Amino acid sequence: MKVLGAAWDELYSVMAQMVQGLFRHGLPLTDKIAARTALTNFFLHIHPVRVRRSWIRMSYTLCLGGLSFFLFIVLTVTGLYLMFYYVPSVEHAYQDMYDLKFVVTFGGVIRNMHRWAAHAMVITVWLHVARVFYTGAYKKPREFNWAIGTTLLLITLLLSFTGYLLPWDQLSIWAITVGTNMARYAPIAGPYTRYLMLGGKVVGANALLRFYVAHVVGLPLVAFLLMVVHFWRVRKDGFSGGL
Ligand code: HEM
Image (cartoon, rainbow, N blue to C red; front, side):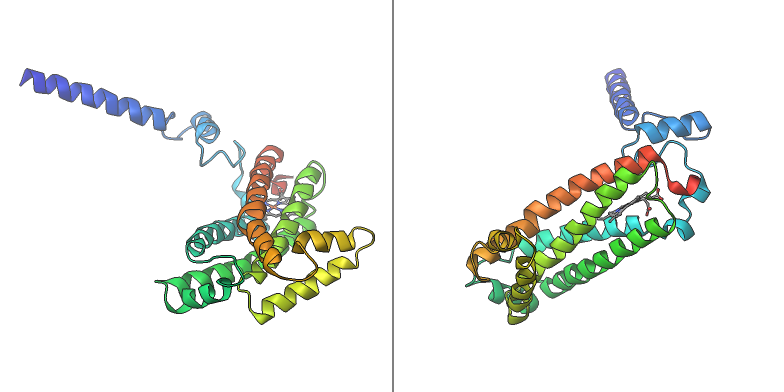
């Protein structure tokens, strides 16, 4: 019985140590503990230590940045699912999209979630830009975050553009033909940019592979890294609603 009691005590102290390791602060009942909680908790550290309720009121931010991030997560998760069934080759791409709709379990639902979330993200990011602009939140000291934001906007649009080719149907092939032809008319770098994007002079197998790699690896990775910097700046600069 004594041995059992000692083992129990040992187990209890190990568990207590583990819980203490995870939650390094008590309940945030005082300002001091609340500040320590925000500083040491991974999930809360995105907010500055002190945030007044009025600074983050929904009627001010409209949660548009948060919504854009949520949609990015939805796109990542559904996109990963689609990757299991899609092969970016001229022979397979169209048929794979077809099978996703009619053969793969939940394929149609996941594909539509991906498609609608993509449209929605373009809209929420634009609205977020408008909110930031109309509330003057781009002014000092947030100019750097505005610059990071413009790059995020560009990447969001490029993600949408590159994803458009992947179904490899008539609509997507001609849309990208027109889109990249427009890029060709940019001064000096235009023709090179188009050649670089397509890996040739027409929208063919090379273009499909390039767009796929940019869509599933390059652009999401850069977007994620920029979002980390974006959120870190929001935390450091504080919310403009507090001005
Ligand atoms: C993928 C795109 C983006 C995501 C996920 C994102 C996310 C966020 C979040 C969560 C916030 C804090 C809460 C809020 O204001 O809603 C924020 C603030 C901010 N964002 Fe974005 N953002 C994105 C794109 C942009 C763009 C395109 C711009 C500008 C061109 C921009 C500029 C700013 C600025 C200046 C702030 C600080 C606003 C303030 O303090 O009131 N963001 N962003």
